[in-house]
Length: 318
Image (spheres, rainbow, N blue to C red):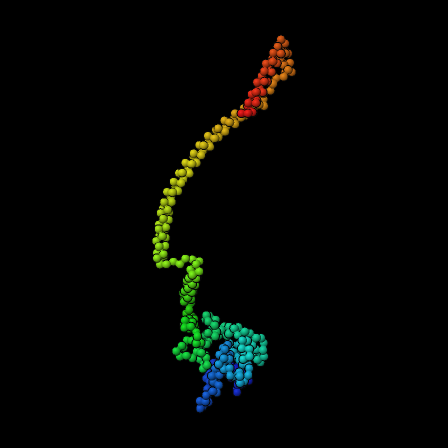
């Protein structure tokens, strides 16, 4: 909780706060313009608001830029800060003497406050949470006809969403909201694609025709599925018959090849082995048959050689 604010521009330099209700009172005759609203604006400024600089800029005009020193107590820990009108986007961490330790961005400061006040499980920023609880003249949340607006231009749907989030009831709606957003994005994308001609725009009549055609195609696909087994059997029969015919043809060709190989082997043997008998080969014959007519034999062998030459030529040609 906030326990004090200090400023050298205050008449009372330090304003203390205690747990429970804290009341800011005017004088006994209800004098106006004595600083009650300004103090509430300063409180909003301490909690990270910007309305003080906009609505109460006359304070800076009259008093010049100045700083506010403030202390929070979270549990038993005291934390000290300083924020000034000259550099409102920075908040300075301080020691217990309000001497500057380090500057932090205003976003980091409000994040720290959100965590310190145990508001981390609420899906809103710290300022969105506290803005409706800071009703001060001069802020834009005083319109009685729009009690949920944090500012005038806020969308009514955002106001309702923020209230639901504040009470931690938004999670069931999140999925629906994301689905709606995705569908709207899809619709916008399809519309743009149709407008640019990337896809054809389908009319209601064309849509019905497409549905009819799709149903017909689905029926055809279903029929094919039902008869697929029969088709497969027929294909197998055709394939088996073709394989059998090819096998018979293969056996015939192999048999013909074997016959031709045999003939070719005989021809090659005849070509290689048919040699003429020479005179020296007849000497052994004379040893056993002294009266043999070798001249006659040589004449016969010469005839055989001539015939062999002719046959060899014919074989090679074949």
